[in-house]
Image 1 (spheres, helix red, strand yellow):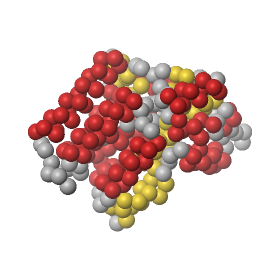
Image 2: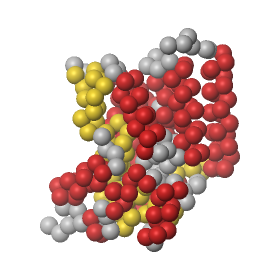
Image 3: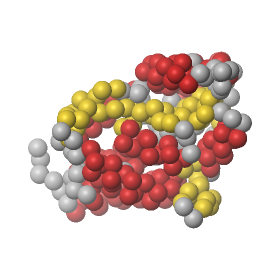
Image 4: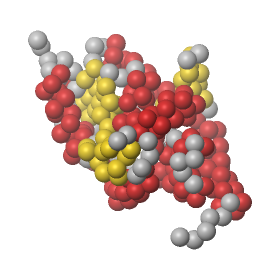
Length: 263
């Protein structure tokens, strides 16, 4: 069978406008899995990510915090929370340009994969929601149905590229004819493994690399509310300002009204 091409999409700030893990923090808070202080930190971190992006050191700190935080959580409970709130959380923050690109690649006969360092419990349902064939995501260790605080697989940096190579061999994909999309310089290995790297909403480092290498640079700005009832455009400019304002207000209210004892 002749090899086929594929399209690999990073998730955060490439397909959706917010970090996927932080986007579900309110849902986890309502279910009693996180405290007000942790929620406030997540809102603040989400605002900084939306405004400035995230460096490798920041992502590593977030990874270690989340592993510590989720130790002892029930995996099935997390899956249920994500399933029940997916459309509410992700529907209004999906980039219209990304949705259209995914549809175009599928129409051209290419397989579509969502690639993210976020947990598979979030990325897999998101991939199905977006119409992708498969998700490449981090996998947490589970014992007796509870998270242990360890990782079996961390889909980050070079590991993304290594996983893409394995999938290409498994599925008979021609990577030289495949596409990859990302916003972060930490995904440089993923972009380099395909014949058609495309930079989306890049951080400074990746924008500089793209300029030197002549890679296409796309700016995704239009948001599309995707629901079972259909799709409708969202004013990205107004939403962006509203999101930043709401996040700042949310952090202030949580900290001022519900102070937590020092630990």
